[in-house]
Length: 213
Image (cartoon, rainbow, N blue to C red; front, side, top):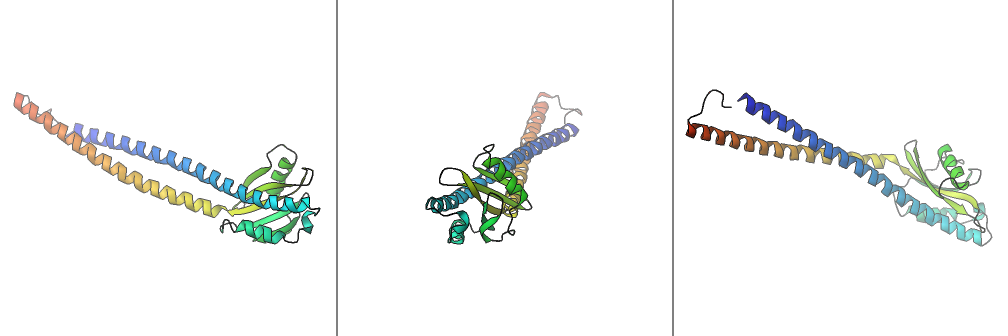
């Protein structure tokens, strides 16, 4: 009986560790996929607004002279109601147009740092940074001759990202528990059948004794 119990406990622990490990890897992959998906979606939205402002600049207007700037940003924001704000700022980081819950007349320092790297060509023309419970994705706005004149930045709440991650984590944990329980039950049945088979063979051969589990 002790051998049976030890075997059962050992296999059950092994199953639990393996299932939880698989669930953990799945959670990491899902979190990475979700972050990339949100970043790509925000980049597309920012790029759409940047093109509209670029078209106005091609007509000879400066960024601050685009009278329908807020309307352009509002149309871009309509693609995702979760977006908290969209803003356009110039080379000095001064906000010229914005919709939603903006942060005043100056963009966040992390946004300015990412903008400077993109403007200098160190990074690509788009970026994404996470700070102060927000994801900030931006895209450069180029002038008539291809030179950067400003940028569009889209604000997205990290709470939305965390909620989706937590929801998936709970679902994976729930599934892992049920799968583990099912496998443990199968192990119990298999070990019990093997034990019964061994006992039957021992009895039939006349070798049953105290050492039989």
